Image (cartoon, rainbow, N blue to C red):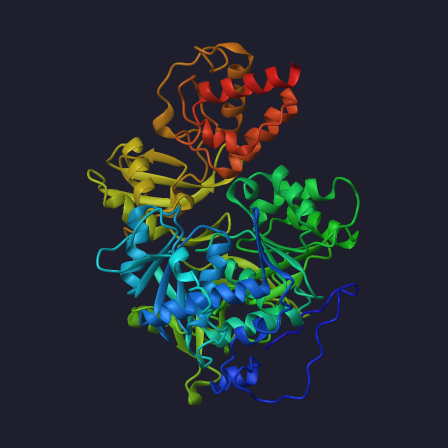
Length: 625
């Protein structure tokens, strides 16, 4: 069943669709499904107004003419290096104008791109390049190739245009099934797996967001908020192809709600993709003046709590902003469903977008009855090609479509349990396996457990999604053998920061079910303090050895947000289990109690209590001077 997403009455109408004419650049569902059309985004990009801003990144601004010229030069150089359709180019570049040029240039050459976030640990970057079989690595010149034997070139080399000999913007012809990109997700086997998505699927994503009212009007200003390695970034760069301006959000701004709110206004953003965890502290700042903003929040990546849903719905109904809930696995090209957050009641993930077809099935692959819970399977032209170089895993997750078996159609098993409402919208009910969502990231708990058991001295490990003392969702690692400090250090060297647990609890043995298997339900889902940090006898308020007003305040706030029984001047916020959301809470409380504008970046720059307190004292002195 495919449900039509109801548009909000005030939204701009979707573009009208002319009578169908199949062309080499056609991106409609009919051609994409048949595999006869190129279904490529670049044909649309070619007609974007040349003088309009395409990319804004700090003090750099590229018009569409300049972007096309740089992408053409980039593609020509790639072609000279033997890169073409089905080649994979690893882009080890931070968010910025060079990354955008590299994505468009790679696609212009007919090749596929693999995002490799430079912020990832070296071991992770090496695995992505090796496992994908990348033909080339593009860097900013800071580092070389993560893998010996795989050539590295800089983005500057690839965009350099010989004097008087500019390359024409002429994308290499491709088909709808030609590989567009490979994005890695957490893997249940202990290693991440690469998802392959074709050109037609990426084009259909943009068309369907337009039809849903999520991308309206002309010349929108879209904030790029996601990590390049996160599939939400695809949704953002595709907006370029309809002539919208892409505004890059730097890391300092995106992790500080006050800076982000100011940035949204200063840059006049009209669209922002954001996770619920990120939206929660931002929403009050966006709505506190009571005035409307021409802003659409595309909220996705994890479940929206009922409390946040009600706040977003109230802002949507009041016309302060628009809020759209989007859901989808990487394997089905970013967004599979969408629904306006415009009414009270039970949170939902909206209706299935037209490029996909929904199946709600029981364990025997039989359709469930009306209103019953079932596992969500997705079929249609936006289902990905599979997992790169993983035929066995592909066959396990991309299975024969029960409604289209005769023609060889496939459906993707999402692992998500859902229930269908009478109006065609879906309610998300949770996972059917060991996968979790945390701050917008999809995490396979077995991958973290495998990394833990690779550490010397660890006999057994289990990881669960629980809560810290402040009620914030966090990963908790239970381990038999090994030292918590060593475990944290080892995981930080091999896993992305969002996969490193906040708390480590040593156990003598793990609870088991009657059949002898690990009983995860018997593991506490909340720990008041990281076990390894209960190392100091506290005085009456748990802040012995502290000097000065700022140190005492910081210690008290840390005790509240981290749940630590004892805090000392040499303690490190992040080693005590702190993370980005707790850093935001810390800054908020300091601002409230001392009326000092402490940026979130200060917590990262001064993670030791004594150093952060000294920095705050400097800010107070400057304020009162």
